[in-house]
Structure formats: C-alpha cells, structure tokens
Amino acid sequence: MQAEMGGREFRGFMETFLRYADSGWGKVYNYAWSLGMGIPPIVALVLLRHDPGSASFVLTAIGLGIVILGVYVVSNVWKTPQYKVILAWDPDALPATWEADRQRYFNINWIQLVTTWIAFILFLVALLALPH
Image (cartoon, rainbow, N blue to C red; front, side):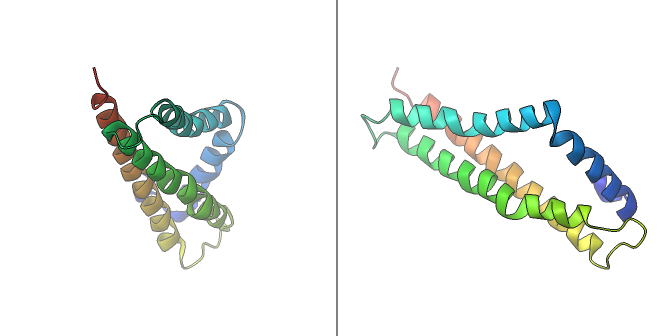
C-alpha cells in the first residue's frame, strides 16, 4: 500500500502514523512490544543458567542477540533516523532522493520482520527443547 503512494502522500501518512505511534496508547504499545521481546528471554536465560550448554539456553541466547541487533539496534541506528529524514521532506518540494529514502525505510522494515520471525522461531524451538 505504501509503495503505491506518491511522495507527498507517503510523507503525510508517515507524519500521521508517527504522531500516533509516539504518543498515548501507541507509545505504550511500542514500549510493551519492545520490552516483551527482551525481558522474557532474559528471564528464561536466568532460569536456565544452571545449564548454559543446553539447547534451550543456547537458542534463547541467540534469539535474544538477534532481538538486540535486529530490532533494538536497527531501530535506534537506522529506523529512527530514517523517520527524521522522511519527516524533513517538504511535501511541496520533495527531494530527488525521496524514492530511495522510502525504499530504505521499506528495507529496514524487512530486516526487522525477518529478524523478529527468526528470533520467534528460535524461542519456540528453545521452548520445545526443554526437558519434559
């Protein structure tokens, strides 16, 4: 849907989206989602600390590393600055790079989608690997 938008429309959409995502319930949701991806694996690692060589421990640790790099670092190093680039566009005089900037935003989202699913799968496999 966003790929079909023109630059002015995309910029307007992002402004509205970010206004809601960065305040009120949107901000609560973002923090809950972010913390929910990091705190449970840390708790699991603490509970599994007696057996650091177990498949569950190793898979959880790898999953947490992926969350840290693929979600937290990507968000803070690339995604948030990319939001600022998009919001800096003048809707009446888009920069020549607006399509490349938009594609970069899409690429960042793909990276986060893939890393989130990989971490989720690792966490599920770690759960299944727990002794019964």
